[in-house]
Image (tube, rainbow, N blue to C red):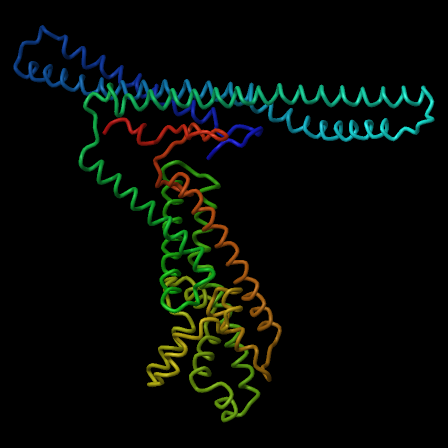
Length: 464
């Protein structure tokens, strides 16, 4: 995340300051607990061995707690100081300047146009123009030039004000980062270093973030490549795993941090990504089954078998006979259930039709590519190919289900593309999409054309 030149600064002063105050409050609570330990150590009138052991333990514990108190206190002070500096830089310097610049640039553009027009008017005066006309044109040109020059001066002043605020923000962030680094890695570390399980946790967190990024990328690729044999199945499975992780993160975030619309939205999008395709596929299968059943009812048994085949007739009658509850149950089953194409392949193998099964499993690379790319759902593609036939009965309910499947699959594709793209961006930026995975807390952002100034969450991990 970096500041955009001449626009409002990134960062939330209140949030940073609140975190700083929270750390300071914890440090004060630790200080009060140390007072209780002091009372135990100072009770020299009690001479029992038990009290001697208690005093010795209290003294040892007090030293360890003091180390932690220093971390909380110094980190809290660093964050609170940065929060104050960010508030001044943002709300008193850079942001007001950015608002002024937005208006002044429009005014300057109009003034420069007027300046050019006035200069052209002077140049275009005829040789026999009267002195009054010449004087008027030159006065207009002079005034236009003065106005444009004044606006340029105003813009330059506000650009300097924005730059001062921007530089003050990054300087304060650098100071805060150095102060926290000192208590975590520098001279004030006081032996509080990460142990074995802390390292394991860091590795686990890294692997989890890497997995989320892989699932996000797979979710994007699956939209365009789900039809590719083997690769498509792998991408769909990883995309489903990413949706599951997003749902879990949202639930944990609400459970630990309280309700938020962002977390709820993340859960909703995860559920849609996980089950939306199955629900749309169920609608597509229903539309196809309804048409098969109603069309076959108008034909003789022999004609029905010749047109659709025994296997399709049986499966369609079974699908058409499902109750609403059964349809919902089918849609909510594991997102890794076989698609209509997978089931067709299984049937062909069972019937020992090896060649047809191989052709179905490994179609020509671009066979039905347009439909697969548009719908991203095998069941909808299968339905679309079915309805390309002639002589089918299509009543109002069938037509509604068919159109719902078409529109739903396309919309589902776009939503999934947006969801996975957003999650990928946030995961790469901070390792923390909708939920809980990340521990990075960036409070200084990249200046325009400069280096990153970050305070990393690991640097605020106070007791290792």
